[in-house]
Length: 192
Figure 1 (cartoon, rainbow, N blue to C red):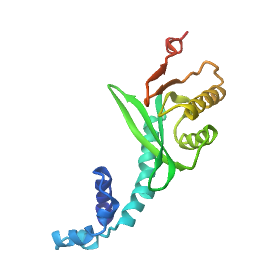
Figure 2 (cartoon, rainbow, N blue to C red):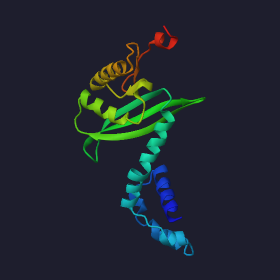
Figure 3 (cartoon, rainbow, N blue to C red):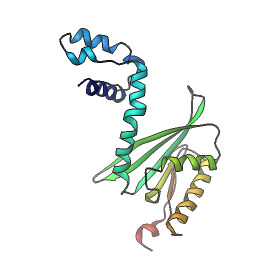
Figure 4 (tube, one colour):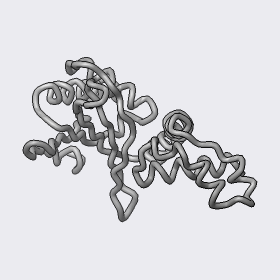
């Protein structure tokens, strides 16, 4: 029961965006609020334990659940590079978008930290992310900006065409910042 309570608390904190530091005195609070509860008496939680449980205990399971849900579906790969001010390194956030009729879902998949990255470096990191997903099911990529990402688009396109053996396997491309550009290859969807 204790482990279940600790997992429930970590999920609550992550779900409502509490900082992990907010977990530092919660065990004492629970003992005061519920003095007759054996679970409250044995409950132990601090910022390090909450962070560890979220990152190394729960996140991999949720990531695998999402990968299993998406693996047989076509999906859009979304990624965004930004400077993480705390780590002072570039952070690559990867999301995917998929359809479960009648809804379309966009879900966070993972973040990868890296230094200055070329398109080749980015391709390696994207490949690492895609080990749990089926790369050939990507129908579109969404990215945040210009030069390096267009090179990644071309490299990913070539890689997919090579892997599938299909020279007509095309990705739709889309940028959502700073402007919107689309390339629609209707013939691929219409079977021509």
